[in-house]
Amino acid sequence: MKTCVQCKNEFQIFDEDREFYAKIKVPEPTWCPDCRNMRRCAVRNERVLYMRACDLCKKQTLSTHHADVPFPVYCTSCWWSDNWDALDYGREFDFSRHFFEQFSDLTNAVPHSALLAKNMENSPYCQDAEGLKDSYFAICTFFGRNFLYTYWIGWAEDLVDCNFILHSERLYECQDVQKSYGCRYVYNSYAMTDSSFCFACSDCVDCFMCANLRHKSYCIENVQYTKKEYHEKMKQYTLGSYSMREKLIKRFFDFVADYPRRYAFMRKTEDSVGDYLGECKDVYWGFDVFGQERGRYLYDAGLGKDCMDFLQFGLDCELDYEAHDGGWSYNAHFVTSAAYVMSCEYVFLVRDIQDCFGCFGLQKKQYCIFNKQYSKEEYENLRKRIIEHMKQTGEYGEFFPIQYSPYAYNETTAQQWYPKTKEEVLARGWKWRDDLPGKYDRPTIEWSAAPDDIKDAPDDIIKNIFACTKCAKNYRIIKQEFDFYKSRTIPLPRLCPDCRFYERFSHRNPRKLWHRQCMCELSHESHGGQRCLVEFETPYAPPEGRAILQRSEKVFCGYCYDRTIS
Image (cartoon, rainbow, N blue to C red; front, side, top):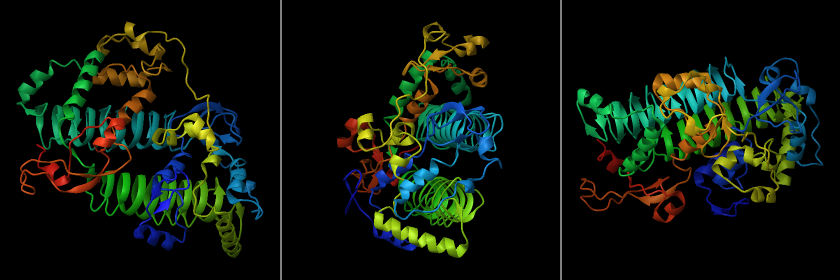
């Protein structure tokens, strides 16, 4: 066992880990898996956005960077243009100084992109996005149209207030759903059509307030009805009413709490440990991972093999390590915001490069160190010398330190997954920002004076400024959003977009695992009415851990769970 230098907790390095480190020739980590992921999260700002001037064209632009950061910030048009060259900021490596200190100097000189967004059409206020059309405040979202207030979406259309959705259309307030159409308030489900308030269902049509169903139609609270009976009973629910919505949401989560949970959400996955895994094989400690083979310590990763320590990274990746935000790479280590990279280490905000070390902002380059061009022989010799220097200073093998992040800790997803107080952050020498964006002025209309049912909401209500009923922050209902609510009979939201996001997120499992035993005592042939003896790793906390997480689920192994679903 090793002791994490950050949290001081013990962690294990397995033989499979050591084989990988030896293969890519990097030292063993000194931080535990959780702290390593926290460190990657600390360079990732997804939701804290500012209006500021582009330092090149001077136009106002939305940015993840505050106006007072020490480095220049270019709008996406300027950053991707040919009006500047990152090689102009190249410099010699100084062997009398630490690597990360010099790299921080480089990143404070080279322009940063205001947002990570590419190939966008009529899609403002979108961050870490590509290939979107007619979308607004879509975060970590790719290839689709008409997304409003979404997170982690791909290949979809007409989604509002949804998280973790693939290949779906016309969804509202859904999370962890694939290949579905016309649904609202559906969670952890697959191939659903025209259904509402469903949990862990698959291949269902016209189902309402259901859990653990397979291949069903016209069910309410897991009771089968005829088509005529179903539609007659559904008339009692005024889905456009906010007061009705609140009652149904409470009823829904009370209802699903009585149904067994599979120990983890996995689909077409073999020999893997983690949660929200799809089409994976031999993945250990993976969360929200799709199409990975022989991966370890992966978070939000997809389509690759033989990789370790990822965060929001994937798509045709191999032999990558300690990588954040990007993909399409081979043999890339300690990289962030990097796409189409090969045989690179310690590169940041780069695209289509290979054989580069310690570079920032480069595109279509090879044999560069600290943004300076070298010949192949010069590059290889200097790279070896720098790595030896970093080994002596204890830097080689570590990801970019949190104190050198371009963001304050509470601007990043580290605060979302690993929350800390201002005092804790400052005590570690990390940055904290007090002036996060958001206005808290008096609203132009109180929610008590607004119509309860969307059918009674006038078109000019979008001119108003509202106050979130939870955090009191101001927000608006944009026209595109209002039109969606009207067409789908959905009440106006009383929470701001951020609070809606975190409310949905609260219904996901934590990215932690506990070793537990199946709770099934039913008369299955495997254990004949006795307590099932199967053990597993699960994100559902045991009784002693539930006080904090307020969880009380009945957790079954895959075999027992499959025999309880309808």
